[in-house]
Image (cartoon, rainbow, N blue to C red):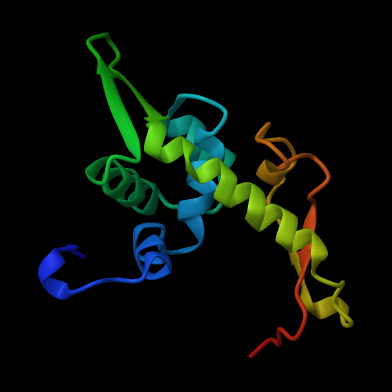
Length: 143
């Protein structure tokens, strides 16, 4: 999606959701909050993400100045991804999301419990810590 002033004023929340679309986007940022990571490290930290999805999200982040990609002239080639200052600005957003999620009451029904990946165990970012193991969702139903 291309953002231009010709489209008129846009809601910041709408733009945020467009830039960080899908469930993997914020988790990728969360992993990069701890410092530069290689592609394989990111993929390993996010069980279930496909190489295609990870590549697509990283390229999108790079295009919008959220992430920098550094390729080192080594054999074998080495590439690292790192948050820019704009990307590091998302720390406050993720901290707020984490704080809010902790206020959500537990699900009334065990089938509504959403298990979080092991990568949520320790990310070393602000309030995001090892205390978050699962998010219990109210009102979610299997279809």
